Length: 156
Image 1 (tube, one colour):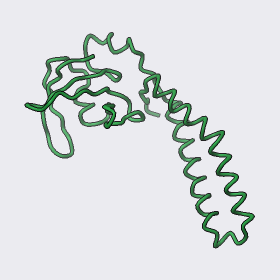
Image 2: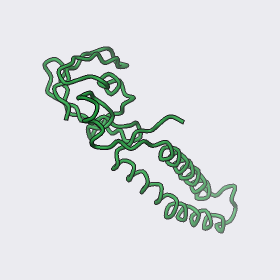
Image 3: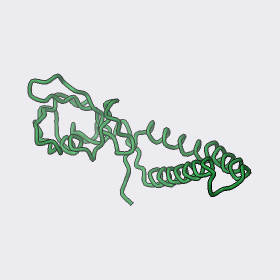
Image 4: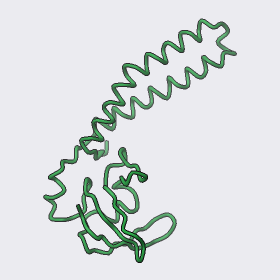
């Protein structure tokens, strides 16, 4: 099982989601299933089908979260500084593409990625390209839409 990189906050958030699904959501879905079964003919009962689908989704998400958390490696705050100024998972990086404005990203594991919040995966094209480079380096990003270069302005 591959290692999943998580920040402390990301680990906690996923653990809270898992706890919620196990305790609250499972019971809600079980209650919906019970009510739908009392509603008569199960073959034609849309509510029963919807509840079964939701149950399958909840159980699948529980399994996914269990696997992520079991293989998680927590990124410590001091760990990124120990790597001699290299971009690592957990680093916050300011990059600039040619004449464009500077952009700030935190490199996180895939389970925590949220580009809208400036959190990009170490497995994404930009994340992969930035890893193990220093401030001042120009790196080539191999993206699905084409290749482009960015300069690492600073590592925070």
